[in-house]
Image (cartoon, rainbow, N blue to C red; front, side, top):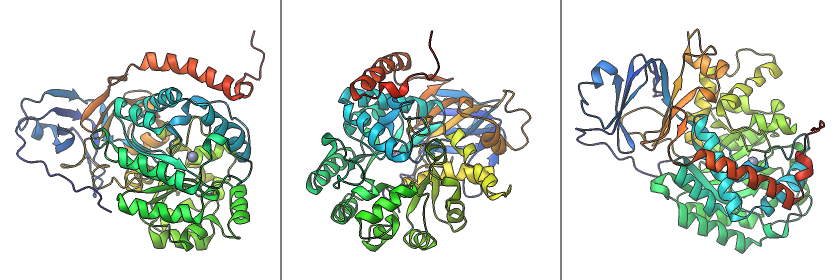
Length: 476
Ligand SMILES: [Zn+2]
C-alpha cells in the first residue's frame, strides 16, 4: 500500500552527509547486496547514492559532513514493531506476574497515575533507549496524553507510528480505572482528534494511527467506525490480539463465542493496513483469515518470556513460511523490560529449540523481520528499510572491532547471534545525525534520565505500585 508517493532526488551536486569506508554495508535491497568499502551519500532526508567508496568520493567532493565508517558496519535502522513508549517508567514494577494481574493491577494503575509530564519523560526515555540500541522507527499502540509522546518523538528525532488508545467495553475481566473509561463516541472522537492533528507531524516522521487497544475491550461498532476513519485518513489500525490463552477465553465470553481474529475477520476489520500484536494463540483457520486479508503481525517473544504467554507454541514460524508479514517487537519497559531489538532478534531463535529444528529462523530472516517486515507492517516500506537512492536516510553504524564481533565471517550472523545494541555508535534518522559516537545530539540525555528516575519513584508511590518494585533481598 503506497500512502505517500516517493520523491525522486533531482540534480544532486552537493550533499549534506557522505559516509565512507564501511567495512560492511548491508543495503537490504531486493538482491540483499552487501558492499565492502561501502559509501552512502545523503542530501536532506534522502539517500541520493550508494556504492563503493572510490566511486562516490570523486562524485561528492564537498559534503557538509563526512562520517568515516572504516572498521564498521552500516545498515538500515531497526524497527520495533510493538513499543509502549509511555510505559517506560514502570520498568521493574510487574516482574513474575500473570497477564491479568499485569494488565489490571500494574499497567493500568501506572497509566492512570501518569501526568502529562510523566508521559513526556517516559517517552523521552524510551526514545533514548531505542535510538541508542539501533531502532530508528517504532509502532506504539498508545495510551493517554499521547500529545506528549509525540513531543518526545519530535524532539529526539526518531520515526514513529503513534496512536491514542480506544476502548469502549469496561467489563472485560476486572474493571479498568475510571480515568480510562469512555463510551464509543468519546473513544472515536479522541482517536480521530489525535490522527487529524499528528498524521504527518514532525516533518513527516510521525504517522498517526487508530488503536483498538485490546481486542476483548472494543465493540463491533467501535471496530467498524474505526475502520471507516482509517480509510478516510489513509492510515492504519493497530490492536493487541490473542496474547495469552486467558484473553481468548474472555473474548469468547464477551463476544458471542467468537475467537478474537475470527470476530475481526467476520466484521470486516482485517486488512493490509491492520497490525495485530502478539498473536500467540491462533487456530489454523485464523491464520487463513490473516493470510487472505494481508493483515500484519508483530511477534513479541521477550514480552512472552517475561509473562509466560506461551509464545513458543504459536504459529509465527508457520505464518512466516506462508508469506504473512511478521515483524518483531519488544513491547515495553514492564513486560520484556528491555527494548534492544538485537536482543529481541536473538530471543526469537528460541523457536529452534522448542521445535528441535536448528534450521529455523536463520539470522538473515530475523534481520528481515526486524527491518523489511517492520517497515512493511508500519506501511512505511515504500520510503524506508533499504539503503538505496530515493529512500529516506534512516541508518545505523555499528562498531565491529570488539571481541563479540571477531572473527567476522558472515556479519549478519554476528549481528543476530553475537552482538547487541551496544555495538551501535551512530544513528541517522530522516537525514539527521541523532546519535554520534554513542552521544545523543538532539536532547540532553543525562538530564532526562536524572529527572526520569525521580519521576518514576513518584509515580510508583502515587499509584500504590511502589511495593512491587522493592528488592527482594535485604538492602543494608
Ligand atoms: Zn502491548
